[in-house]
Amino acid sequence: MRIWKSLILLFLFALAFFILIQPWGGFPDPDAFVHAKETQWIIQHGPLLSFPWLDLTLLGSHFADLEFLHHVLLIPFVYLFGPLWGVQIAGVVFASAFFVLFFLLLKRLRAHAPFFWSFLLFLSPAMVERFSLSKPSPLAIGLFLFGLTAYVLKKPLWVFLAGFVFALSHGGWSLLLVSEVALLCGAWLFDVVVEGMPIRSFFSLRPWALIFWSAAGTALGVVIHPNFPHNLTLLWTQLVQVAVLTSFHRVFLGAEWLPAAWTSLVVSVAGICFASLAFVFGWTEKRAVLDLDHARNTAGFSIVLAGLFALSIKSFRMIEYFVPFFIFFLALLVSSIRIKRERGWQFVRNWFNSLQRWFKFLFAGLILLCSAGILIPLISSVLFLRAQARPFMEFAKGFASISRTAEPGDRVFHSSWDQFPELFFLDDRLRYISGLDPTFLLAARPDLSDAYRDLTRGTRQDAYFVIHELFHAKFVFAENHDAAFLRALASDPRFVRLSADERTSTFRVE
Image (cartoon, rainbow, N blue to C red; front, side, top):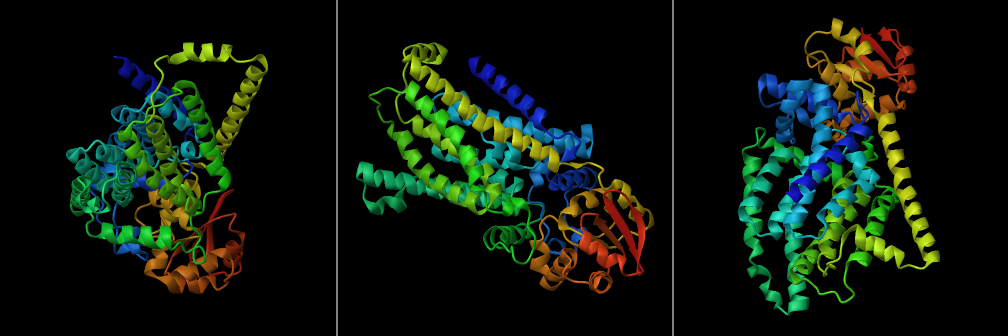
Protein backbone atom coordinates (compact mmCIF):
# COMPACT_ATOMS: atom_id res chain seq x y z
CA MET A 1 0.00 0.00 0.00
CA ARG A 2 2.92 2.31 0.74
CA ILE A 3 4.16 2.23 -2.86
CA TRP A 4 0.74 3.25 -4.16
CA LYS A 5 0.69 6.22 -1.80
CA SER A 6 4.10 7.26 -3.14
CA LEU A 7 2.93 6.89 -6.74
CA ILE A 8 -0.24 8.90 -6.17
CA LEU A 9 1.65 11.61 -4.28
CA LEU A 10 4.31 11.84 -6.98
CA PHE A 11 1.76 11.98 -9.81
CA LEU A 12 -0.38 14.61 -8.09
CA PHE A 13 2.64 16.77 -7.28
CA ALA A 14 3.91 16.52 -10.88
CA LEU A 15 0.42 17.24 -12.21
CA ALA A 16 0.06 20.34 -10.05
CA PHE A 17 3.57 21.46 -11.00
CA PHE A 18 3.01 21.22 -14.76
CA ILE A 19 -0.47 22.72 -14.50
CA LEU A 20 1.06 25.70 -12.72
CA ILE A 21 3.85 26.36 -15.21
CA GLN A 22 1.89 25.57 -18.39
CA PRO A 23 1.16 28.65 -20.57
CA TRP A 24 -2.49 27.76 -21.00
CA GLY A 25 -4.10 28.87 -24.24
CA GLY A 26 -0.85 28.90 -26.20
CA PHE A 27 1.93 26.60 -27.39
CA PRO A 28 5.60 27.50 -26.78
CA ASP A 29 6.51 25.12 -29.62
CA PRO A 30 4.51 25.42 -32.87
CA ASP A 31 4.84 21.68 -33.58
CA ALA A 32 2.00 21.15 -31.10
CA PHE A 33 -0.40 22.58 -33.71
CA VAL A 34 0.65 19.81 -36.10
CA HIS A 35 0.16 17.15 -33.43
CA ALA A 36 -3.34 18.51 -32.87
CA LYS A 37 -4.16 18.54 -36.58
CA GLU A 38 -2.75 15.09 -37.29
CA THR A 39 -4.66 13.61 -34.34
CA GLN A 40 -7.84 15.28 -35.60
CA TRP A 41 -7.16 13.83 -39.06
CA ILE A 42 -6.71 10.31 -37.63
CA ILE A 43 -10.06 10.62 -35.84
CA GLN A 44 -11.84 11.72 -39.02
CA HIS A 45 -10.00 9.82 -41.78
CA GLY A 46 -7.67 7.23 -40.24
CA PRO A 47 -3.84 7.16 -40.40
CA LEU A 48 -2.24 9.96 -42.38
CA LEU A 49 -0.65 8.28 -45.43
CA SER A 50 0.56 11.34 -47.37
CA PHE A 51 1.31 15.01 -46.78
CA PRO A 52 0.24 17.08 -49.80
CA TRP A 53 0.34 20.32 -47.81
CA LEU A 54 4.14 20.43 -48.15
CA ASP A 55 4.42 18.87 -51.60
CA LEU A 56 7.61 20.77 -52.47
CA THR A 57 9.50 19.23 -49.56
CA LEU A 58 10.67 15.70 -48.81
CA LEU A 59 7.40 15.21 -46.92
CA GLY A 60 5.51 15.46 -50.20
CA SER A 61 7.07 12.22 -51.50
CA HIS A 62 8.31 10.43 -48.37
CA PHE A 63 5.96 11.38 -45.56
CA ALA A 64 5.85 9.39 -42.34
CA ASP A 65 3.99 10.11 -39.14
CA LEU A 66 6.92 9.15 -36.90
CA GLU A 67 4.84 9.94 -33.79
CA PHE A 68 1.89 7.79 -34.93
CA LEU A 69 1.25 6.01 -31.62
CA HIS A 70 1.61 9.29 -29.73
CA HIS A 71 -1.17 10.72 -31.89
CA VAL A 72 -3.30 7.65 -31.19
CA LEU A 73 -2.84 8.24 -27.45
CA LEU A 74 -3.95 11.84 -27.96
CA ILE A 75 -7.29 10.78 -29.44
CA PRO A 76 -9.26 10.60 -26.13
CA PHE A 77 -8.01 14.04 -25.11
CA VAL A 78 -8.75 15.60 -28.51
CA TYR A 79 -12.17 13.96 -28.56
CA LEU A 80 -13.07 15.25 -25.10
CA PHE A 81 -11.46 18.71 -25.07
CA GLY A 82 -10.98 19.62 -28.71
CA PRO A 83 -7.72 19.47 -30.72
CA LEU A 84 -5.78 22.35 -29.16
CA TRP A 85 -6.88 22.15 -25.54
CA GLY A 86 -6.80 18.37 -25.77
CA VAL A 87 -3.14 18.31 -26.85
CA GLN A 88 -2.16 20.76 -24.10
CA ILE A 89 -4.00 18.83 -21.37
CA ALA A 90 -2.52 15.57 -22.65
CA GLY A 91 0.96 17.09 -22.52
CA VAL A 92 0.53 17.84 -18.82
CA VAL A 93 -0.83 14.35 -18.09
CA PHE A 94 1.92 12.58 -20.06
CA ALA A 95 4.65 14.64 -18.41
CA SER A 96 3.25 13.78 -14.96
CA ALA A 97 2.90 10.09 -15.86
CA PHE A 98 6.58 10.02 -16.80
CA PHE A 99 7.53 10.69 -13.16
CA VAL A 100 5.47 7.69 -12.06
CA LEU A 101 7.13 5.46 -14.66
CA PHE A 102 10.55 6.76 -13.61
CA PHE A 103 9.78 5.80 -9.99
CA LEU A 104 8.55 2.32 -10.95
CA LEU A 105 11.60 1.57 -13.10
CA LEU A 106 13.99 2.56 -10.30
CA LYS A 107 11.95 0.48 -7.87
CA ARG A 108 12.18 -2.51 -10.19
CA LEU A 109 15.96 -2.06 -10.42
CA ARG A 110 16.21 -2.11 -6.61
CA ALA A 111 17.54 1.44 -6.52
CA HIS A 112 17.70 3.04 -3.07
CA ALA A 113 15.11 5.75 -2.35
CA PRO A 114 13.37 5.85 -5.79
CA PHE A 115 11.06 8.63 -4.61
CA PHE A 116 14.08 10.82 -3.87
CA TRP A 117 15.58 10.26 -7.32
CA SER A 118 12.25 10.82 -9.05
CA PHE A 119 11.86 14.11 -7.24
CA LEU A 120 15.26 15.26 -8.53
CA LEU A 121 13.76 15.52 -12.01
CA PHE A 122 12.15 18.79 -10.94
CA LEU A 123 15.60 20.31 -10.34
CA SER A 124 16.44 20.63 -14.04
CA PRO A 125 14.89 23.76 -15.59
CA ALA A 126 15.92 22.70 -19.10
CA MET A 127 14.18 19.31 -18.81
CA VAL A 128 11.08 20.87 -17.24
CA GLU A 129 10.99 23.32 -20.13
CA ARG A 130 11.23 20.55 -22.73
CA PHE A 131 8.51 18.53 -20.98
CA SER A 132 6.14 21.54 -21.11
CA LEU A 133 6.04 21.84 -24.91
CA SER A 134 3.11 19.42 -25.47
CA LYS A 135 5.38 17.19 -27.56
CA PRO A 136 5.94 13.39 -27.45
CA SER A 137 9.13 13.76 -25.39
CA PRO A 138 7.79 12.19 -22.14
CA LEU A 139 6.53 9.14 -24.06
CA ALA A 140 9.77 8.72 -26.02
CA ILE A 141 12.08 9.08 -23.01
CA GLY A 142 9.84 6.82 -20.94
CA LEU A 143 10.10 4.10 -23.60
CA PHE A 144 13.86 4.65 -23.78
CA LEU A 145 14.31 4.10 -20.03
CA PHE A 146 11.80 1.24 -20.04
CA GLY A 147 13.77 -0.53 -22.77
CA LEU A 148 17.07 -0.12 -20.91
CA THR A 149 15.48 -1.35 -17.68
CA ALA A 150 14.09 -4.40 -19.48
CA TYR A 151 17.58 -5.08 -20.84
CA VAL A 152 19.19 -4.82 -17.40
CA LEU A 153 16.54 -7.12 -15.90
CA LYS A 154 17.04 -9.59 -18.78
CA LYS A 155 13.37 -9.62 -19.80
CA PRO A 156 13.18 -10.63 -23.52
CA LEU A 157 9.44 -9.93 -23.85
CA TRP A 158 9.76 -6.48 -22.27
CA VAL A 159 12.74 -5.67 -24.48
CA PHE A 160 10.77 -6.75 -27.55
CA LEU A 161 7.75 -4.66 -26.56
CA ALA A 162 9.88 -1.60 -25.81
CA GLY A 163 11.45 -1.70 -29.28
CA PHE A 164 8.11 -2.37 -30.95
CA VAL A 165 6.20 0.44 -29.25
CA PHE A 166 9.11 2.88 -29.55
CA ALA A 167 9.31 2.37 -33.34
CA LEU A 168 5.62 3.28 -33.63
CA SER A 169 5.79 6.24 -31.24
CA HIS A 170 8.87 8.29 -32.04
CA GLY A 171 11.77 8.64 -34.42
CA GLY A 172 14.31 8.24 -31.60
CA TRP A 173 14.03 4.44 -31.48
CA SER A 174 17.53 3.96 -32.90
CA LEU A 175 18.95 5.52 -29.73
CA LEU A 176 17.58 2.61 -27.69
CA LEU A 177 19.35 0.00 -29.82
CA VAL A 178 22.66 1.87 -29.72
CA SER A 179 22.38 2.32 -25.94
CA GLU A 180 21.70 -1.38 -25.39
CA VAL A 181 24.87 -2.24 -27.29
CA ALA A 182 26.71 0.31 -25.12
CA LEU A 183 25.36 -1.39 -21.98
CA LEU A 184 26.63 -4.73 -23.26
CA CYS A 185 30.08 -3.27 -23.98
CA GLY A 186 30.27 -1.63 -20.55
CA ALA A 187 29.32 -4.83 -18.72
CA TRP A 188 31.84 -6.77 -20.79
CA LEU A 189 34.64 -4.31 -19.95
CA PHE A 190 33.69 -4.55 -16.27
CA ASP A 191 33.91 -8.34 -16.36
CA VAL A 192 37.23 -8.26 -18.20
CA VAL A 193 38.82 -5.74 -15.81
CA VAL A 194 37.21 -6.71 -12.50
CA GLU A 195 36.22 -10.36 -12.94
CA GLY A 196 39.15 -11.39 -15.16
CA MET A 197 37.04 -12.79 -18.00
CA PRO A 198 38.84 -13.40 -21.34
CA ILE A 199 38.47 -10.74 -24.01
CA ARG A 200 37.19 -13.27 -26.55
CA SER A 201 34.04 -13.72 -24.43
CA PHE A 202 32.53 -10.59 -26.02
CA PHE A 203 30.74 -12.43 -28.83
CA SER A 204 29.44 -15.19 -26.60
CA LEU A 205 27.76 -12.93 -24.07
CA ARG A 206 24.15 -13.82 -23.23
CA PRO A 207 22.86 -10.20 -23.55
CA TRP A 208 23.33 -10.47 -27.32
CA ALA A 209 20.06 -12.41 -27.31
CA LEU A 210 18.34 -9.47 -25.62
CA ILE A 211 19.65 -7.09 -28.27
CA PHE A 212 18.32 -9.49 -30.91
CA TRP A 213 14.84 -9.34 -29.31
CA SER A 214 15.02 -5.56 -29.11
CA ALA A 215 16.01 -5.33 -32.78
CA ALA A 216 13.24 -7.75 -33.71
CA GLY A 217 10.62 -5.68 -31.89
CA THR A 218 11.93 -2.50 -33.48
CA ALA A 219 11.95 -4.06 -36.96
CA LEU A 220 8.37 -5.25 -36.53
CA GLY A 221 7.28 -1.77 -35.40
CA VAL A 222 9.03 -0.18 -38.38
CA VAL A 223 7.52 -2.61 -40.90
CA ILE A 224 3.91 -2.44 -39.68
CA HIS A 225 4.06 1.35 -39.39
CA PRO A 226 1.34 2.89 -41.60
CA ASN A 227 3.98 4.85 -43.52
CA PHE A 228 6.52 2.09 -44.18
CA PRO A 229 9.01 2.36 -45.94
CA HIS A 230 8.89 6.19 -45.99
CA ASN A 231 9.45 6.21 -42.22
CA LEU A 232 13.01 4.97 -42.86
CA THR A 233 13.71 7.61 -45.52
CA LEU A 234 12.40 10.42 -43.35
CA LEU A 235 14.26 9.14 -40.29
CA TRP A 236 17.51 8.99 -42.27
CA THR A 237 17.06 12.65 -43.21
CA GLN A 238 16.41 13.63 -39.59
CA LEU A 239 19.32 11.65 -38.17
CA VAL A 240 21.93 12.45 -40.81
CA GLN A 241 21.06 15.69 -42.58
CA VAL A 242 19.38 17.42 -39.64
CA ALA A 243 21.00 16.02 -36.47
CA VAL A 244 24.53 15.22 -37.70
CA LEU A 245 25.19 17.26 -40.85
CA THR A 246 23.33 20.27 -39.51
CA SER A 247 23.00 22.83 -42.33
CA PHE A 248 23.21 26.03 -40.30
CA HIS A 249 24.72 27.84 -43.30
CA ARG A 250 21.87 26.84 -45.63
CA VAL A 251 18.73 27.14 -43.48
CA PHE A 252 17.47 28.69 -40.25
CA LEU A 253 16.92 25.73 -37.93
CA GLY A 254 14.87 25.69 -34.75
CA ALA A 255 16.62 26.61 -31.51
CA GLU A 256 16.43 23.02 -30.28
CA TRP A 257 19.01 21.97 -32.88
CA LEU A 258 21.49 24.60 -31.73
CA PRO A 259 24.28 23.54 -29.37
CA ALA A 260 23.29 23.62 -25.72
CA ALA A 261 24.70 26.51 -23.71
CA TRP A 262 27.11 25.47 -20.98
CA THR A 263 25.02 27.41 -18.48
CA SER A 264 22.00 25.22 -19.28
CA LEU A 265 24.00 22.05 -18.80
CA VAL A 266 25.61 23.28 -15.58
CA VAL A 267 22.33 24.45 -14.08
CA SER A 268 20.63 21.21 -15.13
CA VAL A 269 23.14 19.02 -13.31
CA ALA A 270 24.38 21.23 -10.46
CA GLY A 271 21.35 20.87 -8.19
CA ILE A 272 21.08 17.17 -9.00
CA CYS A 273 24.74 16.57 -8.14
CA PHE A 274 24.48 18.52 -4.88
CA ALA A 275 21.40 16.59 -3.76
CA SER A 276 23.04 13.32 -4.75
CA LEU A 277 26.19 14.10 -2.78
CA ALA A 278 24.09 15.00 0.25
CA PHE A 279 22.28 11.68 -0.08
CA VAL A 280 25.52 9.71 -0.34
CA PHE A 281 27.08 11.58 2.58
CA GLY A 282 24.08 11.18 4.84
CA TRP A 283 22.77 7.73 4.05
CA THR A 284 25.71 5.48 3.16
CA GLU A 285 27.88 3.51 5.53
CA LYS A 286 31.50 4.39 6.07
CA ARG A 287 32.49 0.84 5.19
CA ALA A 288 30.51 0.48 2.00
CA VAL A 289 30.13 -2.90 0.32
CA LEU A 290 29.99 -2.91 -3.47
CA ASP A 291 26.99 -4.48 -5.19
CA LEU A 292 28.61 -6.09 -8.22
CA ASP A 293 25.40 -6.33 -10.25
CA HIS A 294 24.69 -2.61 -9.89
CA ALA A 295 28.33 -1.77 -10.51
CA ARG A 296 28.36 -3.84 -13.72
CA ASN A 297 25.24 -2.09 -14.99
CA THR A 298 26.65 1.30 -14.04
CA ALA A 299 29.72 0.64 -16.18
CA GLY A 300 27.52 0.34 -19.25
CA PHE A 301 25.34 3.27 -18.20
CA SER A 302 28.42 5.48 -18.00
CA ILE A 303 29.09 4.91 -21.72
CA VAL A 304 25.50 5.84 -22.59
CA LEU A 305 25.71 8.88 -20.34
CA ALA A 306 28.86 10.11 -22.09
CA GLY A 307 27.14 9.71 -25.45
CA LEU A 308 24.04 11.62 -24.36
CA PHE A 309 26.22 14.37 -22.90
CA ALA A 310 28.00 14.74 -26.24
CA LEU A 311 24.67 14.83 -28.08
CA SER A 312 23.39 17.49 -25.67
CA ILE A 313 26.38 19.68 -26.45
CA LYS A 314 25.62 19.22 -30.17
CA SER A 315 21.85 19.87 -29.87
CA PHE A 316 19.93 21.41 -26.99
CA ARG A 317 16.95 19.10 -27.54
CA MET A 318 18.95 16.07 -26.35
CA ILE A 319 19.06 17.48 -22.85
CA GLU A 320 15.61 15.96 -22.39
CA TYR A 321 17.27 12.54 -22.65
CA PHE A 322 20.47 13.44 -20.81
CA VAL A 323 18.96 14.74 -17.56
CA PRO A 324 16.60 11.81 -16.76
CA PHE A 325 19.29 9.33 -17.73
CA PHE A 326 21.85 11.17 -15.61
CA ILE A 327 19.59 10.79 -12.57
CA PHE A 328 18.97 7.16 -13.52
CA PHE A 329 22.73 6.63 -13.65
CA LEU A 330 23.28 8.31 -10.28
CA ALA A 331 20.55 6.18 -8.69
CA LEU A 332 22.23 2.97 -9.84
CA LEU A 333 25.66 4.27 -8.89
CA VAL A 334 24.58 5.12 -5.35
CA SER A 335 22.72 1.81 -5.13
CA SER A 336 26.02 0.02 -5.69
CA ILE A 337 26.92 0.77 -2.06
CA ARG A 338 25.19 -0.25 1.15
CA ILE A 339 22.68 2.14 2.72
CA LYS A 340 22.33 2.76 6.43
CA ARG A 341 19.35 1.22 8.13
CA GLU A 342 18.61 4.45 9.96
CA ARG A 343 16.89 6.63 7.40
CA GLY A 344 14.34 9.38 7.17
CA TRP A 345 13.89 12.78 8.77
CA GLN A 346 14.89 11.46 12.20
CA PHE A 347 18.35 10.64 10.91
CA VAL A 348 18.62 14.05 9.23
CA ARG A 349 17.59 15.77 12.45
CA ASN A 350 20.08 13.80 14.54
CA TRP A 351 22.88 14.38 12.08
CA PHE A 352 22.17 18.14 11.85
CA ASN A 353 22.06 18.51 15.64
CA SER A 354 25.45 16.83 15.92
CA LEU A 355 27.13 19.54 13.86
CA GLN A 356 29.06 22.46 15.31
CA ARG A 357 27.09 25.71 15.45
CA TRP A 358 29.18 27.49 12.83
CA PHE A 359 28.87 24.53 10.49
CA LYS A 360 25.09 24.56 10.86
CA PHE A 361 24.96 28.14 9.58
CA LEU A 362 27.38 27.28 6.79
CA PHE A 363 25.33 24.25 5.79
CA ALA A 364 22.04 26.20 5.92
CA GLY A 365 23.56 28.97 3.79
CA LEU A 366 24.75 26.42 1.28
CA ILE A 367 21.24 24.96 1.07
CA LEU A 368 19.73 28.42 0.50
CA LEU A 369 22.35 29.25 -2.13
CA CYS A 370 21.71 26.03 -4.03
CA SER A 371 17.95 26.51 -3.75
CA ALA A 372 18.27 29.99 -5.25
CA GLY A 373 20.54 28.58 -7.96
CA ILE A 374 17.77 26.14 -8.90
CA LEU A 375 14.70 28.33 -8.41
CA ILE A 376 15.97 31.33 -10.37
CA PRO A 377 16.65 29.36 -13.60
CA LEU A 378 13.38 27.46 -13.08
CA ILE A 379 11.42 30.71 -12.81
CA SER A 380 13.32 32.00 -15.83
CA SER A 381 12.28 28.90 -17.80
CA VAL A 382 8.64 29.40 -16.82
CA LEU A 383 8.77 33.04 -17.94
CA PHE A 384 10.42 31.94 -21.18
CA LEU A 385 7.64 29.43 -21.82
CA ARG A 386 5.00 32.09 -21.32
CA ALA A 387 6.85 34.61 -23.51
CA GLN A 388 7.32 32.09 -26.33
CA ALA A 389 3.79 30.70 -26.23
CA ARG A 390 1.78 31.34 -29.38
CA PRO A 391 -1.92 31.92 -28.61
CA PHE A 392 -4.09 29.28 -30.20
CA MET A 393 -5.74 31.69 -32.65
CA GLU A 394 -2.88 34.16 -33.07
CA PHE A 395 -2.95 34.00 -36.90
CA ALA A 396 -6.68 33.30 -37.29
CA LYS A 397 -7.82 36.89 -37.84
CA GLY A 398 -5.27 37.74 -40.51
CA PHE A 399 -5.30 34.37 -42.26
CA ALA A 400 -9.09 34.41 -42.56
CA SER A 401 -8.75 36.88 -45.44
CA ILE A 402 -6.84 34.21 -47.39
CA SER A 403 -9.13 31.34 -46.43
CA ARG A 404 -12.20 33.24 -47.59
CA THR A 405 -10.91 33.74 -51.13
CA ALA A 406 -8.55 30.80 -51.74
CA GLU A 407 -9.52 27.70 -53.68
CA PRO A 408 -8.55 24.20 -52.48
CA GLY A 409 -4.98 23.44 -53.54
CA ASP A 410 -3.84 27.07 -53.75
CA ARG A 411 -0.35 27.70 -52.45
CA VAL A 412 0.41 30.20 -49.69
CA PHE A 413 3.88 31.72 -49.48
CA HIS A 414 4.61 32.34 -45.78
CA SER A 415 7.55 34.30 -44.47
CA SER A 416 8.94 31.63 -42.11
CA TRP A 417 8.91 27.83 -42.02
CA ASP A 418 7.80 27.78 -38.36
CA GLN A 419 4.51 29.52 -39.27
CA PHE A 420 3.37 26.41 -41.10
CA PRO A 421 1.98 24.44 -38.10
CA GLU A 422 -0.59 27.08 -37.17
CA LEU A 423 -1.49 27.87 -40.78
CA PHE A 424 -1.93 24.16 -41.48
CA PHE A 425 -4.20 23.87 -38.47
CA LEU A 426 -6.29 26.85 -39.61
CA ASP A 427 -6.79 25.66 -43.20
CA ASP A 428 -5.90 22.19 -44.50
CA ARG A 429 -7.34 22.90 -47.97
CA LEU A 430 -4.25 24.85 -49.01
CA ARG A 431 -0.62 24.05 -49.77
CA TYR A 432 2.36 25.72 -48.17
CA ILE A 433 6.11 26.22 -48.71
CA SER A 434 8.13 24.76 -45.84
CA GLY A 435 7.41 23.40 -42.39
CA LEU A 436 8.27 21.09 -39.49
CA ASP A 437 11.95 21.44 -40.43
CA PRO A 438 13.49 23.58 -43.19
CA THR A 439 15.88 20.75 -44.07
CA PHE A 440 12.99 18.87 -45.67
CA LEU A 441 12.75 21.55 -48.36
CA LEU A 442 16.53 21.68 -48.67
CA ALA A 443 16.72 17.89 -49.14
CA ALA A 444 14.06 17.86 -51.88
CA ARG A 445 14.71 21.15 -53.71
CA PRO A 446 17.96 22.92 -52.76
CA ASP A 447 17.35 25.63 -55.36
CA LEU A 448 13.94 26.50 -53.94
CA SER A 449 15.29 26.31 -50.38
CA ASP A 450 18.01 28.85 -51.14
CA ALA A 451 15.57 31.18 -52.92
CA TYR A 452 13.11 30.94 -50.02
CA ARG A 453 15.85 31.67 -47.48
CA ASP A 454 17.27 34.64 -49.38
CA LEU A 455 13.91 36.29 -50.03
CA THR A 456 12.55 35.93 -46.50
CA ARG A 457 15.89 37.02 -45.06
CA GLY A 458 15.79 40.20 -47.15
CA THR A 459 18.93 39.54 -49.23
CA ARG A 460 16.95 39.07 -52.44
CA GLN A 461 14.55 41.62 -53.93
CA ASP A 462 12.86 39.88 -56.88
CA ALA A 463 9.91 38.86 -54.74
CA TYR A 464 7.42 38.45 -57.58
CA PHE A 465 9.69 36.12 -59.56
CA VAL A 466 10.37 33.91 -56.53
CA ILE A 467 6.80 33.81 -55.23
CA HIS A 468 4.88 33.66 -58.51
CA GLU A 469 7.28 31.98 -60.96
CA LEU A 470 9.29 29.63 -58.74
CA PHE A 471 6.76 28.67 -56.10
CA HIS A 472 3.51 29.36 -58.03
CA ALA A 473 1.94 30.85 -54.92
CA LYS A 474 -1.30 32.80 -55.10
CA PHE A 475 -1.22 34.28 -51.60
CA VAL A 476 1.36 35.60 -49.17
CA PHE A 477 1.25 35.52 -45.39
CA ALA A 478 3.82 37.40 -43.30
CA GLU A 479 4.39 38.51 -39.74
CA ASN A 480 5.02 42.21 -39.37
CA HIS A 481 8.42 41.71 -37.77
CA ASP A 482 9.67 40.36 -41.16
CA ALA A 483 10.27 43.96 -42.19
CA ALA A 484 12.75 43.36 -45.02
CA PHE A 485 10.47 40.81 -46.64
CA LEU A 486 7.45 43.11 -46.37
CA ARG A 487 9.39 45.98 -47.96
CA ALA A 488 10.08 43.79 -50.99
CA LEU A 489 6.33 43.17 -51.33
CA ALA A 490 5.27 46.76 -50.72
CA SER A 491 7.37 48.03 -53.63
CA ASP A 492 5.56 45.80 -56.13
CA PRO A 493 1.88 46.60 -57.02
CA ARG A 494 1.34 43.00 -58.10
CA PHE A 495 1.03 42.09 -54.42
CA VAL A 496 -2.43 43.28 -53.37
CA ARG A 497 -2.87 43.67 -49.65
CA LEU A 498 -5.81 41.70 -48.24
CA SER A 499 -5.46 42.43 -44.53
CA ALA A 500 -3.18 43.96 -41.94
CA ASP A 501 -3.41 43.80 -38.18
CA GLU A 502 -1.03 44.36 -35.29
CA ARG A 503 0.72 41.04 -35.93
CA THR A 504 0.29 39.88 -39.55
CA SER A 505 -0.17 40.99 -43.13
CA THR A 506 -1.65 39.09 -46.07
CA PHE A 507 -1.52 39.61 -49.83
CA ARG A 508 -2.99 38.24 -53.04
CA VAL A 509 -0.57 37.67 -55.91
CA GLU A 510 -1.82 39.09 -59.21
